[in-house]
Image 1 (cartoon, rainbow, N blue to C red):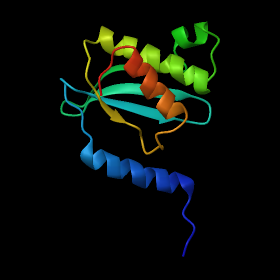
Image 2: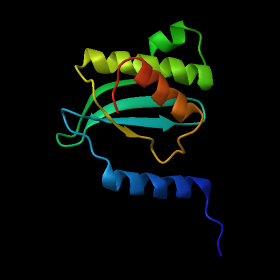
Image 3: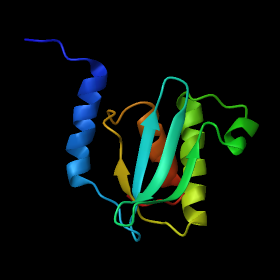
Image 4: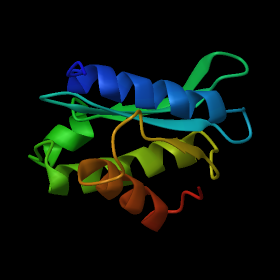
Length: 120
């Protein structure tokens, strides 16, 4: 049995999720992506192929808080993402964890977004 790379496993999980999860203009897909140094959040309308709102750890508001992309920073990013969604008139979303396990930073982003008014 061959050892499969973690990145390949995550990509397979993401494809499995994307078969089921799709965003519309009324209920966009809340996509979370985590790299080694940064965290990115987008609200995507898959029907029209548009990004309605986005935020990341590169955002000036995030940097103004002197936050880093750890658990506390992920919670702050969830709050900023919810604010960006409200500015784009988005209240309900479909959560796309991007193949990452619903644990740690992904969970912190989701919980902070829920606390700040997003429904998913």
